[in-house]
Amino acid sequence: MQEVTKTKLDIPVVSAASEDNGKRLALFDVDGTLLPGDTLWDFFTQTHGSFGRFSPIWACRMPIIQWKLGKLSNSRAKELLLAQFYLGKSEKELREQGQRMLNRIWPRIYPQALKTIETHRQAGATLALVSASPQIWMQEFGKRLNIPTVLCTQLDFQNQIFTGRFLGQNCYGPEKARRIQEAFDLNSFSEIYAYGDSKGDQEMLALATHPHFRPFKP
Image (cartoon, rainbow, N blue to C red; front, top):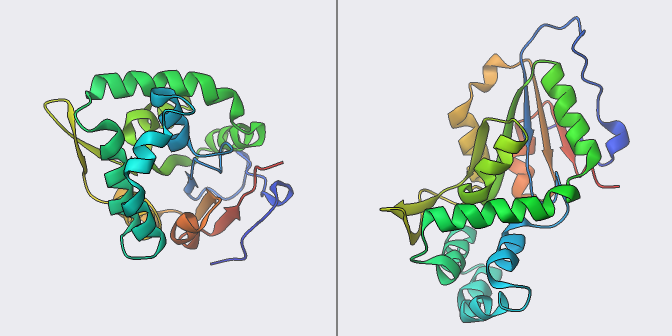
């Protein structure tokens, strides 16, 4: 992987008038990259309130401790936590709550992130969001940004009711790279841009010809 860019000043200019007619792919992590914070915690606050969210977290403290100690996978710990919050809830209700949350947090998106997305779009790049957050608000996030490809964690719903399980793995770390390689023929792109902010993005950044680490934070 090329040296990771750590400031927004080093973001390369992407020009629609470039003499290189090769295909470009631009991959964006969301939480901590396009906006500060973690939308998962924002969602907990949306559904349970600033103080009410701590009760399910406390009830799930043992799996969290096991995860911190390396005895439980990131995916399984997150699955158990989301089950503690939302097992038996309807998909319709959760998606509606997700839309309300996005209305509230939308102003937090970094202006430079929006500018970079639009620059890539104008240059004809293929755009994708790649996030560990679930589809119940991440698909809407992509829709609002006019980015149709959203690779994210998938909650399992049976008869529109959350089962407490994931479909597949948490879209984090190696799973991000796997999802990207499954969705795209990377060899068909002459340039791949990737934007991330944490160790969960390392494998995605490693796929890029232009990796960028925390480029949008002021």
